[in-house]
Image 1 (cartoon, one colour):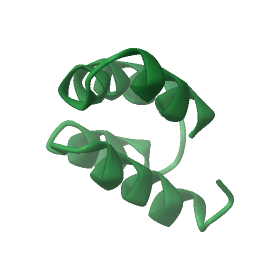
Image 2 (cartoon, one colour):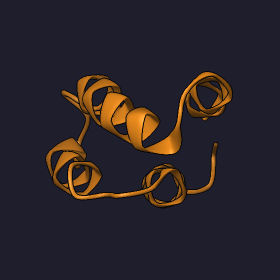
Image 3 (tube, helix red, strand yellow):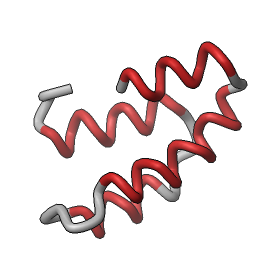
Image 4 (tube, helix red, strand yellow):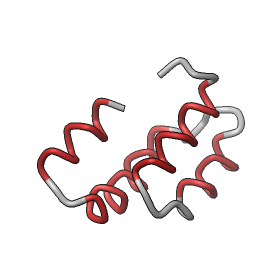
Length: 62
């Protein structure tokens, strides 16, 4: 989440979403349920959606 927030301070949201899709897909390789999460990540259109997906996947740990 900090990665996303930091990126938003530097770049517009649409750029951050595209960049985070790539990063988050890399971060989730090899994790149980990661394949489904990656599919959802690649269809998000906002930072809010990305954060929501991560919170739901990680059970609110972030």
